[in-house]
Length: 492
Image 1 (cartoon, rainbow, N blue to C red):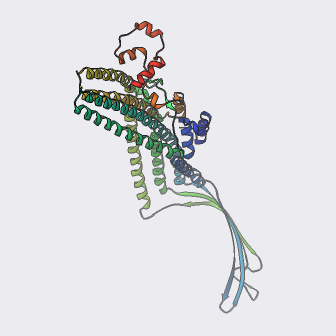
Image 2: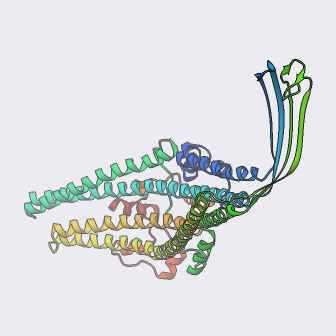
Image 3: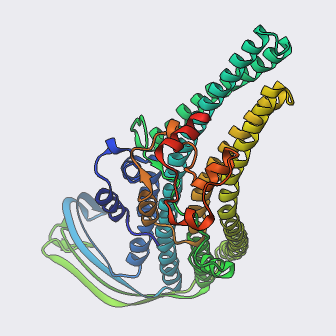
């Protein structure tokens, strides 16, 4: 179970500083404070937990006092009549000795209270996923917009080149029209990307009631690691024990079982201990004779004892309640079994997805290198007349598609990793803190939408022959010099 909400807020405050930084923990802190769904879930949880003290109160002594005053008229035929005042006060104490129905209701209330706490913790986990999903959707949309801008620039260059070649008679007008169509499509893609970015920011605004202009981006150097532990069955076993929604469904089964026992116990006798006291004064005076009530003094009555009530017949209501409780128990058991199957399936799928994403991210990265080399080769072929403009435009599309796929896979890996922990019931704000360590406040999507490449990858990308052997390359820095990096980015 997660820590209480106020502890999570303190964790967020300790890790973030001000909202202007617009990093992951700042957004999470604001969401904790502003989320209407979380506040509603917290109120619902607290309300449902009140079932426990209410059920407990029915097992404790019940004390009641009362008093009254009245103006009465008393008349006896042949004796006369009298009008008088009466007043009284009384006290009653009742202590249940044996009420099985109330006892089982108390046990059910324990499960209801625990279920409310677990479900609120599940809501807190859901907020972590919602914040992370909204945050990284903005980063994804920012990178997609940067890619779309670079793609539009590339197609614009192709259009300018096609026009120049047409003017000097090196190409047909068809090439210009093909290039223009490609440019228009790229421009439309860029406009769509701008809209998607604006929409993605609105999800953060809904969660935090704060408008953000930019967010700290995730560095490409963030390690893409397989899940730990690396054993699928361990994750499934952990999820079967710790998944919060599964815990809540099991508590619902316990509640239904106690409710059934409570319904069956209505056939049993009810035993209460009691103590009563009553004091009254006032009565009629018919010529000095005593009436039903002595007017000259008070009357007191005190009693203590044990009362047994045996239910005999209630018109079939108890039998119906027992049947209803049996059906509710069956329903809870089946729902819990269905939830277990869903959790196992989700955990297995997420584990395999995250595991495969480790290789997929690297494969997508290598696809950028291959697509860049293919684009350059196609461009060279077009310039010497062995390729046409359609080939060039398609190679451009392949290159920027590879960039988008790389970034999409990278962000999917982050979210799927969090969802796997949620399925296992281990997700906490600490996971967001660990992600925050890889955020870069200076991240510029227009500059950083493609990953950095080492020297060997640059050579592969530019179709150059290696200038050093592998051992020499391993001894150098893994990333390319700034000038080469900028040249590669500009070539996009």
